[in-house]
Every structure is written in C-alpha cells, then in structure tokens.
Length: 178
Image: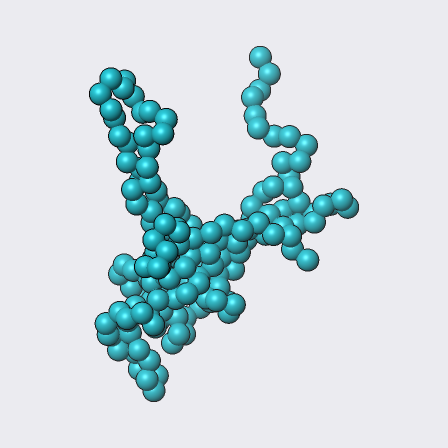
C-alpha cells in the first residue's frame, strides 16, 4: 500500500510561517517570543427534533462566538502595560487602574504572518487576522525569571459591536505581499 498524504505539487506555496507581527491599528505592538496564537471558539446550538437519531442539517445555529489573540511580548513599554490592564490610565509615567468605558476598547488588533511560496511564477502572500473592539482579559503577570528575558502574555478578546450584533468581531484576510 502506498503512503497516504495531502501533499501536492503546490503545497510548498501554502505554508504559514510564524510568529507574525502584531499590530494595534497600523502600529506594530512589539517583539514577541514563544509564538502567538489566534483562536475562534464557536459554540453551536444543536436542536434535536423528535424522531431525529442525530444531528440534523439546518437545525444547527451559532450560539456564541469568542475570538482571542494570545500574544507573548518580550518588548514592554508604558503603552503595552496600559493595553494589558483594560481600563487603566497613564499619567506622568504612572499607570493606575480604572473602569472600562467605550474608549478602552481597541478598535483593531491584528497579526500578520507570511505564507511561503516564492518562486519565479508566484509571490509570497500574507494572512492577517483582525479582532475588533478588543480588550486584554485575564491576569497580567510579570514573571521575571532568574535568567533570561521576561515574557508578558496578553490575551486580546474581541467584542461584538452593539450596532451590528450579527457580525462576528473578527476577520481573516489573505493578501499578496509586494
């Protein structure tokens, strides 16, 4: 029996390479270490009408959506720590906590990674994942190791726009790199 695999003659043109560059709007956030992770968690409602012996086509609905971008930064400055502590404010190099208001949400946080495939007939491309109305949630931990550099992990969570509750707060864009 021959080996089974999914490789074809163009596979090498579609390999995503990381770790990617993270942006807040159009500005790069900073250097990362340990990789970055994008995840979409979609929970489906499974309606089982009487007589159905399993899942029925057309009886599945999206119940909830959560899009998260986990970024592991080795570059830390005042603005990064302010993003990390949602609702906080910065004044004279001092960050203090506060309530979350509409200005706290980050309109767009994104990560762009390269898709390899440069040959004479093709160009490399990129994949960009964007979260909208993002907040960093979860504990903020400054883990300062005995040796080596500290890594600050931020978990950006996307939020639905109240004016467009049927539009999921994320997108994935494929584009050529020029």
